[in-house]
Length: 64
Image (cartoon, rainbow, N blue to C red; front, top):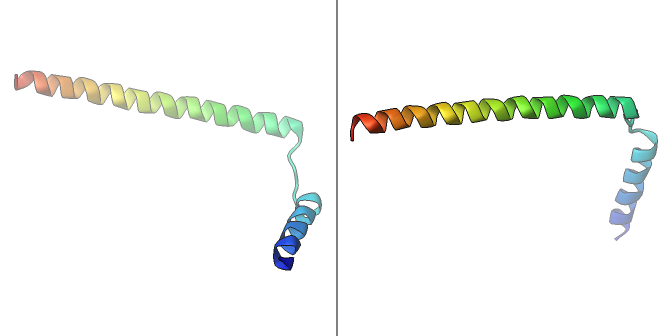
């Protein structure tokens, strides 16, 4: 039980003294970058899904 308490105590001290927390401006900038990247990746996946769906519809229509 002593090891677990020591672990949490050391973790807490590390979070207070050794971790460099981002500023509010940096946090907002990182959030915007992540949102833009998510939108771009989502659009690319949608385009690939749509185009493969259309291609498969064309192939299936040839063998009907």
